[in-house]
Amino acid sequence: MNYCISYFGQMKNFPSNLFPVSTVKWEQDWFRGTMPRIEELVLPDGIVSGLAETNEMCRKNCPLSIPCKFMKRYREYLDTIDFDQLLVKLELLTLDKPVDTIVLMVYEKDDVPCAERPVLQDWFAAHGIELKEWVKPIHKKETNLF
Image 1 (cartoon, rainbow, N blue to C red):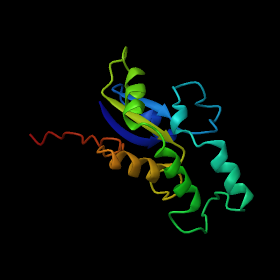
Image 2: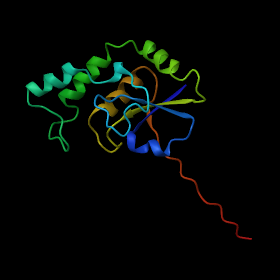
Image 3: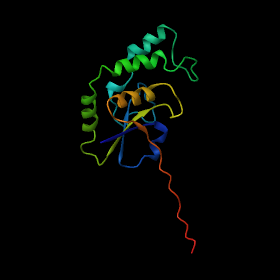
Image 4: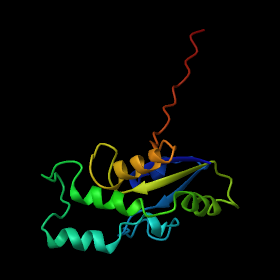
Protein backbone atom coordinates (compact mmCIF):
# COMPACT_ATOMS: atom_id res chain seq x y z
CA MET A 1 0.00 0.00 0.00
CA ASN A 2 1.15 3.54 -0.73
CA TYR A 3 0.55 6.47 1.60
CA CYS A 4 0.34 10.20 1.04
CA ILE A 5 -1.21 13.27 2.64
CA SER A 6 -3.55 15.96 1.34
CA TYR A 7 -6.24 18.41 2.35
CA PHE A 8 -9.98 18.27 1.92
CA GLY A 9 -10.10 20.84 -0.88
CA GLN A 10 -8.20 18.39 -3.10
CA MET A 11 -10.75 15.58 -2.78
CA LYS A 12 -12.58 16.67 -5.94
CA ASN A 13 -9.38 15.90 -7.87
CA PHE A 14 -8.72 12.43 -6.46
CA PRO A 15 -8.65 9.52 -8.90
CA SER A 16 -10.48 6.35 -7.91
CA ASN A 17 -7.31 4.56 -6.72
CA LEU A 18 -7.00 6.93 -3.72
CA PHE A 19 -8.69 6.20 -0.41
CA PRO A 20 -9.05 9.27 1.84
CA VAL A 21 -8.97 8.86 5.62
CA SER A 22 -9.76 11.77 7.91
CA THR A 23 -7.35 12.70 10.69
CA VAL A 24 -9.20 15.81 11.87
CA LYS A 25 -10.91 16.38 15.17
CA TRP A 26 -13.74 18.65 14.04
CA GLU A 27 -15.17 17.58 10.69
CA GLN A 28 -16.96 20.12 8.57
CA ASP A 29 -20.50 19.35 7.44
CA TRP A 30 -19.63 19.04 3.75
CA PHE A 31 -17.37 16.02 4.30
CA ARG A 32 -18.60 14.59 7.61
CA GLY A 33 -19.39 10.93 7.15
CA THR A 34 -17.97 10.71 3.62
CA MET A 35 -14.85 8.83 4.69
CA PRO A 36 -13.54 6.82 7.60
CA ARG A 37 -11.70 8.57 10.39
CA ILE A 38 -8.76 7.03 12.24
CA GLU A 39 -9.26 8.01 15.86
CA GLU A 40 -5.63 7.25 16.76
CA LEU A 41 -4.48 10.07 14.47
CA VAL A 42 -7.04 12.59 15.73
CA LEU A 43 -5.65 15.19 18.08
CA PRO A 44 -6.57 14.15 21.63
CA ASP A 45 -8.65 16.50 23.78
CA GLY A 46 -5.88 16.72 26.34
CA ILE A 47 -3.49 18.37 23.92
CA VAL A 48 -6.00 21.00 22.88
CA SER A 49 -7.21 21.78 26.40
CA GLY A 50 -3.66 21.77 27.76
CA LEU A 51 -2.61 24.41 25.29
CA ALA A 52 -5.73 26.46 25.89
CA GLU A 53 -4.83 26.68 29.54
CA THR A 54 -1.47 28.22 28.65
CA ASN A 55 -2.97 30.64 26.08
CA GLU A 56 -1.15 28.99 23.18
CA MET A 57 -4.11 28.18 20.99
CA CYS A 58 -3.48 27.71 17.32
CA ARG A 59 -4.40 30.71 15.24
CA LYS A 60 -4.09 31.58 11.59
CA ASN A 61 -0.69 33.24 11.12
CA CYS A 62 0.29 31.96 14.54
CA PRO A 63 3.15 34.00 16.04
CA LEU A 64 4.59 31.00 17.85
CA SER A 65 7.82 29.49 16.67
CA ILE A 66 7.74 26.33 14.60
CA PRO A 67 7.66 23.68 15.94
CA CYS A 68 5.34 25.01 18.60
CA LYS A 69 4.22 23.25 21.76
CA PHE A 70 1.13 21.98 19.95
CA MET A 71 3.24 20.16 17.36
CA LYS A 72 5.68 18.85 19.97
CA ARG A 73 2.85 17.47 22.10
CA TYR A 74 1.07 15.97 19.11
CA ARG A 75 4.28 14.19 18.08
CA GLU A 76 4.79 12.92 21.62
CA TYR A 77 1.25 11.56 21.48
CA LEU A 78 1.87 9.87 18.11
CA ASP A 79 4.96 8.20 19.54
CA THR A 80 2.69 6.32 21.96
CA ILE A 81 0.84 4.64 19.06
CA ASP A 82 1.93 1.27 17.70
CA PHE A 83 2.78 2.30 14.13
CA ASP A 84 2.55 -1.20 12.67
CA GLN A 85 -0.90 -1.75 14.18
CA LEU A 86 -2.01 1.58 12.76
CA LEU A 87 -0.91 0.52 9.27
CA VAL A 88 -2.85 -2.73 9.64
CA LYS A 89 -5.94 -0.79 10.69
CA LEU A 90 -5.58 1.58 7.73
CA GLU A 91 -5.13 -1.25 5.27
CA LEU A 92 -8.11 -3.18 6.66
CA LEU A 93 -10.25 -0.20 5.63
CA THR A 94 -9.34 -0.87 2.00
CA LEU A 95 -9.79 -4.66 1.81
CA ASP A 96 -12.85 -4.58 -0.42
CA LYS A 97 -11.83 -1.50 -2.41
CA PRO A 98 -9.83 -1.20 -5.64
CA VAL A 99 -7.30 1.26 -4.23
CA ASP A 100 -3.52 1.35 -3.98
CA THR A 101 -3.01 4.55 -1.98
CA ILE A 102 -4.31 5.74 1.38
CA VAL A 103 -4.45 9.51 1.72
CA LEU A 104 -4.35 11.00 5.22
CA MET A 105 -6.56 14.07 5.15
CA VAL A 106 -5.82 17.29 7.05
CA TYR A 107 -7.43 20.75 6.99
CA GLU A 108 -4.53 22.93 5.98
CA LYS A 109 -3.16 23.37 2.48
CA ASP A 110 0.38 22.18 1.93
CA ASP A 111 1.82 25.70 2.16
CA VAL A 112 0.77 26.06 5.83
CA PRO A 113 3.77 24.99 7.94
CA CYS A 114 1.90 24.35 11.18
CA ALA A 115 -0.59 21.82 12.52
CA GLU A 116 -0.77 18.12 11.84
CA ARG A 117 0.77 17.71 8.37
CA PRO A 118 4.49 18.13 9.22
CA VAL A 119 4.08 16.13 12.42
CA LEU A 120 2.43 13.24 10.58
CA GLN A 121 5.05 13.38 7.83
CA ASP A 122 7.86 13.33 10.36
CA TRP A 123 6.30 10.47 12.31
CA PHE A 124 5.78 8.35 9.18
CA ALA A 125 9.36 9.12 8.06
CA ALA A 126 10.65 7.92 11.42
CA HIS A 127 9.02 4.59 10.56
CA GLY A 128 10.49 4.45 7.05
CA ILE A 129 7.52 5.75 5.04
CA GLU A 130 7.70 9.01 3.14
CA LEU A 131 4.29 10.66 3.44
CA LYS A 132 4.41 12.87 0.35
CA GLU A 133 1.88 15.52 -0.47
CA TRP A 134 -0.57 14.31 -3.12
CA VAL A 135 -0.38 16.55 -6.17
CA LYS A 136 -2.95 16.63 -8.93
CA PRO A 137 -1.32 15.29 -12.09
CA ILE A 138 -0.89 17.80 -14.88
CA HIS A 139 -2.26 16.51 -18.15
CA LYS A 140 -0.73 18.11 -21.20
CA LYS A 141 -2.87 18.37 -24.27
CA GLU A 142 -1.37 16.69 -27.25
CA THR A 143 -1.15 18.87 -30.30
CA ASN A 144 -0.91 17.41 -33.74
CA LEU A 145 1.38 19.59 -35.81
CA PHE A 146 0.75 17.69 -39.03
